Structure formats: C-alpha cells, structure tokens
Amino acid sequence: MKILVTGGLGFIGSHTVVELQNEGFDVVVIDNLSNSSETVLTGIENITCKKPIFEQIDLREKRAVQKFFQKHSDISGVIHFAASKAVGESVENPLLYYENNIHSLVYILQELQQKNEANFIFSSSCTVYGQAEAMPITENAPIQPAMSPYGNTKQIGEEIIIEVCKVSNINSILLRYFNPIGAHSSAEIGELPIGVPQNLVPFISQTAIGLRQELSVYGNDYPTPDGTCIRDYIHVVDLAKAHVIALQRLLQKKNVEKVETFNLGTGTGSSVLEVITAFEKVSHQKLPYKIVARREGDVVSAYANTDKANRVLGWKANSSLEEALESAWKWEQKVRL
Ligand code: UD1
Image (cartoon, rainbow, N blue to C red):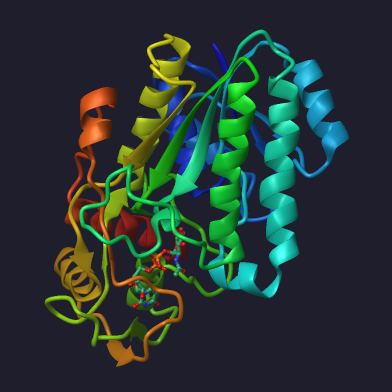
C-alpha cells in the first residue's frame, strides 16, 4: 500500500517513514526542504534498506498538489506533518503560518474529498489544551484559546478536518503530541533545528556538545515541586509507531467515528531540572545552565492521560526519558563530531 507522508524529511516525519517502511508500506514523501534536507533520505535508506519516493513540492502551490494526486492516484493514506512549528516566529509572522499550515491542509483535503474513500492522519499538538485545569490531560479537556498563531493553526486545522470529514468520504485521526524528543537508535536520523533551537532538548544537546554556552532555564518560580515547568517528553520513535497503528486502524476500517482524537505522550510529567539531571546522567557530564525569567506563553504543566491511546489503539510509549535523552545525545555527537 502506498502512503503519502508530507513533511516526511522532518523530525517526526522521517522517523514515521522508517516505521512505515519497516511495516512494509510503500512511502511517498512530499517535502519542500524549508526546514529539512535531502540527506535525510539517505539516513532513512541506511536504516530500512529502502529509499522512499521523494517529491519536492511546496504544498502552498495548489496546482502542484493537484498534479501530485493525479500522478499518484493509488495513495491509500496520508500522514500530514508538513507545517511550520516555531511559536515565536508565528507571532512575528502570522500570515506565513496561516498560509503554510492552513492552505496546504485545504489543498490536500480538496484532493482527498474527490476520492471514494480516503484516510488522513493529522499532526496536532497538546498546545490545543493550553493550561489545562486537570492533570493528566484527557482528550475531553476543553480546547483553550490559542496562545500563538502556530497553536491556532493546529486548532483551526482540527476544525477544518472535522467539518470536511462530516460531508466527505474522508476518515481521519487527529494525533495530539506532547513533547517529542530523541532520535533513531541508529543515529541515522534525528532532529536538525535550523539556527538556535527553541525547544529544550536540542538546546541541551547543543550546549553539551559546546555549540551553546549555557542553557537558560525559563523560570524556577512556578507552582511545581522544583519550581520549573513540567512537560511530557515522548521518544520520537514511540510517537512514529503510533502513527503507523493509527493509519492501520483507518485502513482496516476499525475506527468508530469519522474523526477520532488521541493524545500521544508517556503519561509522565518531568520538570526542566529533572530533564537536565537525566541528561547529565546519560551523557556523563555537567550541563552549564542558569535560571532566567519565565518565557512568555509557557504553561506551568502539561502531561497526557494516555488511557485512550492505550485502550483503543493498543499503543503505549515504551522508552524512558533517559533512553530518549541518550538517543538525542548520540545523534548530536554523530552530527557534530
Ligand atoms: C513548544 C510550544 C508548543 C509546540 C512545541 C513544538 C511554546 C510556549 N510552546 O512546547 O506550542 O507545540 O514547542 O515543538 O513555545 N525551556 C527552557 N529553556 C529553553 C527551552 C525550553 O527552560 O531553552 C523550557 C520551557 O520553558 C518549557 C520546557 O523547557 O518549560 C519545554 O519547552 P519546549 O521544548 O520549547 O516545548 P514547549 O514549550 O512545551
């Protein structure tokens, strides 16, 4: 079966392509290389002994999307990762985010809705919950007003999919990720942020390798046990496997609703200081850091209730925080040394 993975050369996308190919799927990747590199194809091939078909397409170009679906009329499912994801950048340039994240989604759905049946997996985020009132967060927690244009594109994306699925033959699963980290155990693929990383773990590994002087910890006066924010860090390979399971659910018509939503996390919250300590343990070195002011827009705590994914998908995150950090460190060393 042929599966389209948009953004398939990005961080989560590339790990998902590996898991799909491991399960015997034929994969076609669309990527515009705006935040990725063609060399990722070699990494994927080194792991799976198979290179996916690659089409360099910008999904904002409607005509190109139409042409793609004419050429690949036998696509059985789509996993849609392609999107811009930097929160700060989205505040500075909201239209870039609305154009890139929303137009591309609309153009793909327009093509899928012409098919007799279509299966669509959407990359959503726990950011839709904002600061949830109760921890751990279930899928029924209310959606909060978005705190950034990036977050808003995820909420709007979910709404668009729900409305389109109601009136078409498209079935969809919305996957709300908590904080994906780590890299493939082979260190053939991993996270490659362009410029200064905004996310915690790439900043930590770049500091440990000497690329950054020290980590700034954004606030230690939060109402948490050690005063730093709590997140649910999930190994990217566990996350990638959940995509394959979700896709199989749609392909086998096991879904009970036209649109289903699942949290993907470990179910365990870790503070920033706990992540630093765990990283120091696996890398056998001290990490230089200082406490600075809070970062605007950060929520105090967010970790997942994963019961629904466990029960319905039969999926569970297997890797510990330390294993995920170890893989991130192995990857950083491979890339820089
Ligand atoms: C962020 C986004 C979220 C998005 C996700 C995508 C914000 C507010 N949220 O999640 O919407 O879905 O990225 O990857 O930007 N931290 C430090 N020092 C650093 C970097 C981070 O102390 O240099 C702390 C943060 O304050 C936070 C934790 O580490 O408590 C995790 O931060 P990050 O990796 O940026 O993820 P989120 O903020 O959870």
